[in-house]
Image 1 (tube, rainbow, N blue to C red):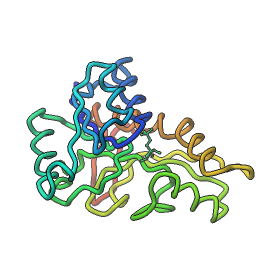
Image 2 (spheres, protein in one colour):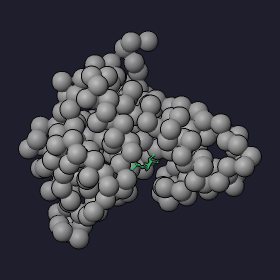
Image 3 (cartoon, rainbow, N blue to C red):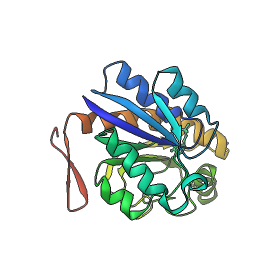
Image 4 (cartoon, rainbow, N blue to C red):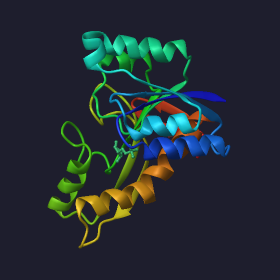
Length: 206
Ligand code: GRF
């Protein structure tokens, strides 16, 4: 069973999907710690409801030492994997290198579209609608020092409708893609079925 650490900043619906997948046995793992960059977010409530340790670690509290504090936090808990479940802060190269190919992020678009600096939250969906794409979706990837640039693990396409607003598109992408492929990617990791070769993810079950 793998130990999972989670970094969050908001509502935590992806975190919930991961917790549920662990509790149902779909993922052979356990979320052992939820760290938020913000106080009072609902993701911390979700952790509490499932008796998972939750805390806040951010720049306001630790300044330039923040990433060192985060590294120690997760090393002390011996986590195998860190999931960025709606984490709105960019991690330093030092943090990423401390957990190389052991940090996963979910991005609400089909990378390399609508990703990188500035593409977060509703901005991603606004950009997709402005471009008039007919398909968007979600991507789970390992985290590298380049924002949204790490090796891609899973992607799922979602239809864009003519009457979509950024909010309706965000909701459909969460329901039809994010909450499915994030737990699926973690399941594959827990089963040791993911290999990264030259920045490309290969699956040993395919
Ligand atoms: C999701 O859309 C995710 O793709 C993005 O941030 C949002 C987080 O939502 N990285 P939640 O906190 O998991 O509900």
